[in-house]
Image (cartoon, rainbow, N blue to C red; front, top):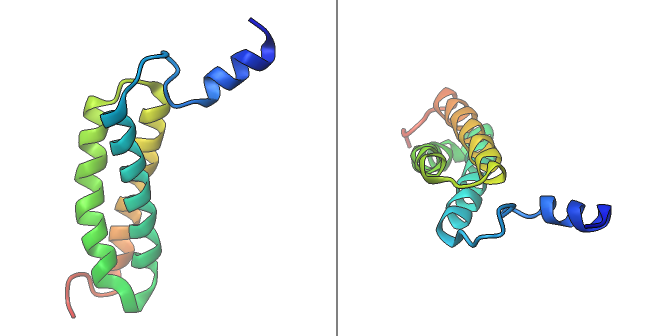
Length: 99
């Protein structure tokens, strides 16, 4: 196997060459909702939606971490967890679930 082929194989989420559609979808959803919580939580006018995204994103990332199959999925899950947690903290500091 050439160096280029090995590099392409490791860049994919499924490094074990098996399909993991549920785990991949949950990992991508976790990081997407986590980043949304971070962005919405850091804007004072959108604190409610940031807190809501954090409440959805953190348990989703934790469950996704529980069933993850590859290291790359776990990286996405941890990043999603951290961003959801920090975004939730920002949202709470700006008012949390209060309108």
